[in-house]
Image (cartoon, rainbow, N blue to C red; front, side, top):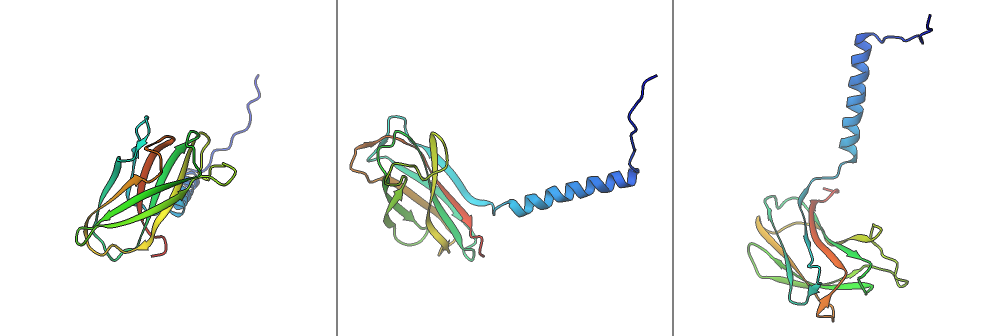
Amino acid sequence: MTNKPKTTNLNPLKNRMLKAVVVGWICLMNCISCEYPALYDRYQPVEQTGWGKEKVYYFTFEVQDTAVPYDLTLNIRNNNLYPYQNLWLFCSEEHPIGSLRQDTIECMLADEYGKWYGNGLSLFHTGFPIRTRYKFPHAGQYTFSFRQGMRRDTLIGIQEIGLTVRASKDN
């Protein structure tokens, strides 16, 4: 004769209610933890031989709602071979209407002791806000382009460059 542990069967109604509470809790946690979906989020790999001075990376996206403020983030992924603390970039912004806007951006990738600011172990990801709560002036297609502005003709250690456009959290 075998002694079986005593099991209690939940009432089927209680069982369904428990499942509904668990599913509801999971859905609620997903809603709370999620950020606004990105209007645009793309990365482009940098050639393994390095980022040449004349190589330009383009990011083109469509804006339809000009009433919404957006946060634009430049994303850099570098490895331990990158020899500098910072990265200078020439940024061009092309609007659907109007003239081309150009700017120079300095991205600090490491502190003065060489410790990388980005997240990661051998590949470091760092985001740099380039526009905060920015309202696009016109609906249509926008293109941002980036070219390295360092003194070296070929820059090693930068693996990917990306751009994220997301509705501001503080709408």
